[in-house]
Amino acid sequence: MSPEDGPRASRLSVSGPTTAPWLDILKTCLLWTALPAAAAAVFSLLGPGIAGAASVAAGWAMIALFFGISLLVGHVVGRSNPSGAIGMFAVTYAIKVVGFAAILLIFGVPEWLERPWFAFTALGAVVMWQAAEIFAYSRTRQLIFSEAPNGPDNSVKGAPGGS
Figure 1 (tube, one colour):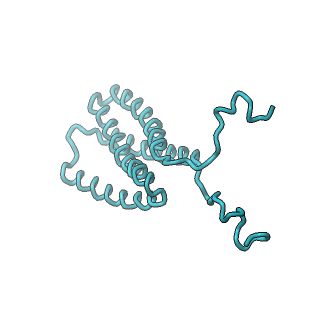
Figure 2: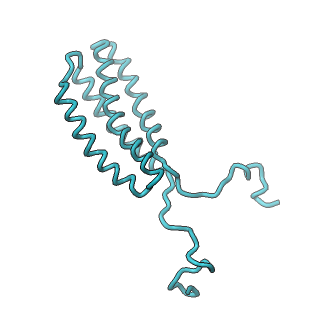
Figure 3: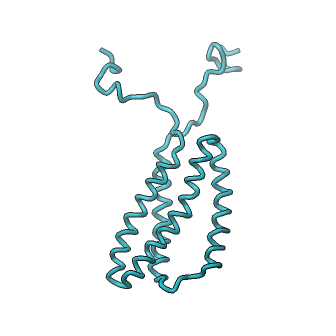
């Protein structure tokens, strides 16, 4: 009986690169940031009340939206052009910075916003989001070299024994 015949054999598969990891990274980032933000919102009810909780929610939502857009763009572009996803991140980043700045200038700061609660939540969410993104990305498998055969005899040109 070979190891491949064991009870786990049906669950094993050939190892390969992670296909389109962006949605899994987004889920991890949302989880890692939403839980502390929810706790902060509950805690803020003891101080500034509903305005504080709304400020925490707004700070978290702004960060989740800002970084989430990039991961969604990476997912959409990465499915058809995996190597183009990183380039689209840069383009998306520039558009987001201009867009968020325009929204801030057009609408201004709402009167109900508790600035310290908003700012500390946004700062904490950025730090946690980046940590979650690094953690989740480090768990993906990236294809560094092609495992495809180079010729009919699977030899590499120029290598000893190759053509």
